[in-house]
Each structure stands twice: as structure tokens, then as C-alpha cells.
Length: 498
Image 1 (cartoon, one colour):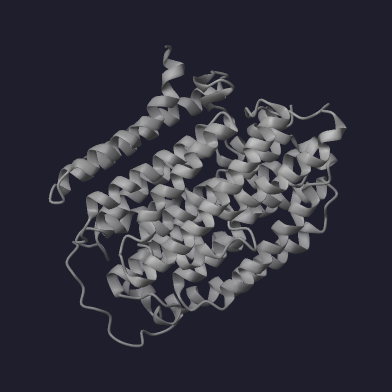
Image 2 (cartoon, helix red, strand yellow):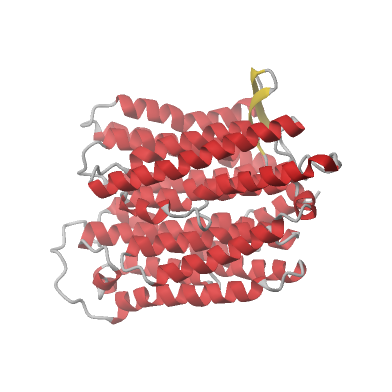
């Protein structure tokens, strides 16, 4: 087997092997467990960077394994897959660093980090899946590996959230399996390819294809938290902050959105989907979810729940973008896959820092926290303004590109949706920022522990600082080669609009 064949397998195996090693380590081997985590995360990032460089220059990375007659396990790196894999690799490394500090004195760390690595392996498998069958295997593996993370604390609230999560996601998985089997019976090959498979098919089966499309979107919409399938996500905020960051920024909700992108562009094809009249209802559903999530966020007093409803709104930008029927809208939706991940993980890292350092969980407890934790609060402010869409931050690039895409596609109704969403983003983020910087603390903060000159433990301090810098950088440098926007435009050119 060639190096190009083995590379996607190696990228997947780094976190799989890490999970096996971590599960086998005694609880007290904290240093060795941390070393394994960081080495695996660093190696995965290197391998993904090699694939990004190769895909940019036309290299092909593909591994095929026949499992049953007509059923093939395929790992493949294309422009879209390495974009998602790159997000996973970068944010896994930072979340690993953060989780090491966050769980420093917690029990069951080997169990946590073992399932944490399995979760990342599942996400990498979803990114590199070359067909719907392979995608389904890793999609369900993601469900099973994230459940122990959601219930990690073992409290009644955590167990309720885990039960709700598993009911939603396993039901969605069953619908997904039904849709894949039905589709396989109708058309045969379900490999991801630019432009899809279905142009020129017998019109007699178009009705069945429309039903299967609805089933696929509904199944994937559970993890993407599309209304009304979003109920599990706010409840899952009882999980530790690193888990919340992983769920929102890189793993579960992004897996659902990524799956919808694959179905629309690489299974059905954008033109065929539009011809069946399937995209306009999906666009309106995404628009409703954007406004609904923001409205619900307004009334949340718990900081992580406010961020959770914000995610419900923000992830639907991706889905809105891919329904805008043009390369500009496609680029806007896809770039938000990365931009939202960077901004949202910043906000969850900061929320975790407030909880761990100050014991603060509610918005109304944040008064004056900016003076006590200035670096964390600057990072939160950058993430919040990015979500609002303030220039020149990452969220501004997304919303500007989506607006251009809506006009180019003749779907100007999306512009008021984007504007109203930004106003609502401001309405639920600016009061938090105001409390951080412009209100006096209601009471003395807990006594400071000694972390040198840092405001919190170094493992917790640096990840949000780095992702806040990234939030600024991907906006300011959006026009440069290899920026998220440039890569999204490359995908629109190479993969979706040949």
C-alpha cells in the first residue's frame, strides 16, 4: 500500500490508539496520560496538514476495504474532508490542553480521556468518510463515545441529559440507517462525489428520492440541532466545559451539519436537489432556526445554556449557506463551519474558566469579572463580537459572504434574516460583556490561587487566548491563501460546482 493510501488511515488511528492506551492506564498515571494525549493530538495535526497540502496540489488520498458484496469502507481526503479534519485536529489539541487543566483533580480521568479520544476518532472518521456507509459507522460511533462524556459527572441532571441525548441521537441514527438502505436500493453507489449521482435518473423514482432526502435531513438534523430536533443540546450543558466545547465547536453539531453538506452536494447534487424543490424549504427551516435559537438565548440566565441556544442559531448559518444556490453562498456556509467552531470554543473555554476559577455559572454573577480575569474576559469579548458579526472578526466574514451569496442567488429575503440575527446576537451577548467590564463585583471573588502571573491555571489560560487570536486572525487575513475563506472558495470551485 502506498503512503497516500495509508495517510488517512494513520490520521484516524492516532486517536484510536490513544484511546486504547489511555483506557489501560491506571488512574494515577496522570503524566503519562497527558503525554499520550498531547503526542496523539500533535501527530494527528501534522498528518492532517500533510493532507491539506497534498489536496491543494492535487494529490489523492484514499483507502478502500470491501466489507460485504456491494458494501465498501472508504476513507478519502478531498477539499471538504480536510477542511473539517483540520478543524477537528486543531481544536482537539487545544481542547486536550484545556481538559488536562480542567479535570486536574477529578476522578475517572482515564475513562474521560479514553472516550474523549474515541470521540475525536469518530469525528475524524466522519470527515474522511468516502461514502454514506462509512459516514454512518463513524456517525453512530460518535453517538456512543460522547454519551459517557455527557454523563461524566454522574449527577442526576447529567444522567437525565445523557438519557435525553441518547434517545434523540439513536432515534436519528435509526432513521439515517433506514434512509441509507432505501437509497442504496434505489441507486446503488452512495460514494461522495462532486455534483452528486442523480442527474439523469428515471423521473419515476424522484418521489422516493424526495422522501429519502427528507429522512436524511431529519436524521442529520438531530445532531445539527435544527428546530424542532434541538432539545437535547441545552440539556447537555451539564457536562464539563471541555465536553461542551467539543459538542458545539467540532464534534456533534458539526458532524450533523457536515453530513447535510455531504448529502446536498455530494450525494444528491445541488442542481438536482433544487430541481426537486427540496432546498427552498430547507433554507426557510434554517432561517427559522437562526432566529428561534437567538430568541431563546435572550432568556437564558445560565451562561452555558445561553451559549447552547446561540449554537442552535449559529450552526444553521451553515445550512442556510448551502441552500443559497451559488458558489458565494456555498463559501459563506462552509467558512462558517470553521469560523463558528473557533469562536464558539473560545466562549466555552471562557465560560469554563469563570466556573472553575470564580465559581460563576450564571450571567448575573459575572459583574466585574473582567477586572479579576482580564485575559479570559478579553477573549470572551472577542468571541462575542465575532458572533455578532463585528468587523474584522471571523463572524463578519461569514455574514458578509452569506449576504453576498443571497444577493447573487436572487434570495434577498435572507438578508433581513442575517441582520435580525446580528441584532439578536448583540442583544444576548452585549449584556454579558457589559457585566464583565462595566459593573462592580457584587461580592469578593474567591481567594486567588497561585499560578505565577496568570489569572488561572496555565492549562486553562492559554487555549481561549489562542482561539481568540485565531478569531481575529481568520478575519483580518481572510483574503490570504489557506485562510478558511480561501479554502471554502476552493471547495466551491473544485467540489461542488465543477
